[in-house]
Length: 390
View 1 (spheres, rainbow, N blue to C red):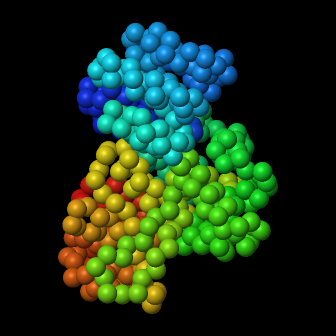
View 2 (view 1 turned 180 degrees about the vertical axis):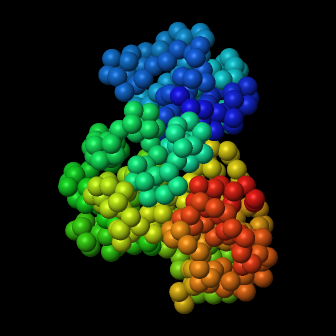
C-alpha cells in the first residue's frame, strides 16, 4: 500500500473527535486506508448480510462489544447505527472510538447533520492523485494520454489491470447497483444512456432539460440522477464564478468526472492511441487537471474553492481558484507546445480584474514548467504547484 496524502489530516482529528468518517467513491481505497491507519481496531463490513443483520437486530451490542475501537465499512447500509453511536459517544466522551466509511455522500451527510453534528470529522478519499501514483509505482509516462486512459482507481494500479476490462465491471457492479439502492431507477437502460451522455459532455455546460429531451425522461429525473452521481463521487459540477463583475455571465455549471479512465470507458475509447485522436481529448484533459485540483483540496484540507468563468461574449477561463480574497485564473490546454494565443483568455481576465501576472497560470500537456510574460506555465504532472502557490 502506498501512503495516502489524506492520512496526514486524519490522524490529528482522531484525538479530537469521537467519530471519524471517511467518505468517497467505491474502490477509492477507503477500507485499505482505515485498516492501515487503525490496525488495532476491530473491522466489520455492513455489505455482508449476516453482519448487517447483527447490526440491525441488536445495534447497541454490535457497537459496544469492540473494546479496542471499531471500523465500520459502508455504514450507510444501517442508518439506525448513527443514533446509537451518538448515545454511546455522549456517554463515554471517548475520542476516536468509531471509524466509519461510506460511499454515498448525501446519505452520510444527512445522518451526520441529524445525529452526529459536532461529534464527527468528515474526510473525502478520492482515487489516487498524480503525486500518489508517482510516489508509489513506476514512473508516470510523460504523455498524459496514457495516464488519462488508465485512470486513477487504486485497484487498476495495484493489480495492473486492463482499464477496458475493469471499468465496465465497475459500472455494472457499483455505479448501477448504488443508483438502484438510492434512487430505485426502474429503466436502467436510460440511466446507462444518461451516464454516457454525461461523459460525452465532459467540460461542457450542464443542461438538464436538453439531456432529458434526448433520453426521453423528465427534467426532475435528470436532476435526481445527476445528484446521485455527485453523491457517489462519480462526477462533479464545477460552478460558475460571477462575483463583483459587471458582465452578463453564464450561470450554468460544467460537467467533470473525478476519473478520466471512467470517461474513456463510457465513451468506448479502447486505447490511449484512440484517445490521442479523439475529438474530446482536450475536454478529457481539462477533467484530468481539474479533478487533480479537487483531489488536492480533499486530501490536504486546503481552503480554496474552484470555479470556471464565461461571459456571454465568449470570453472564458477554464478554472478559477478562490482562496480567501485572492482569485487565481488558470487556463488548461492539452497541447504539448505553447503558443501565445493560449494566453488570450488570461490577458482578458487581467484587463477585466486588474490582477497581477502572479495570479495567472497556464497548465498544458507538456511536462516542463516555463516562464512566459503573461503568466506561469505549468506542466501537467506539476499541476498542484498551481494550488500550492495560492
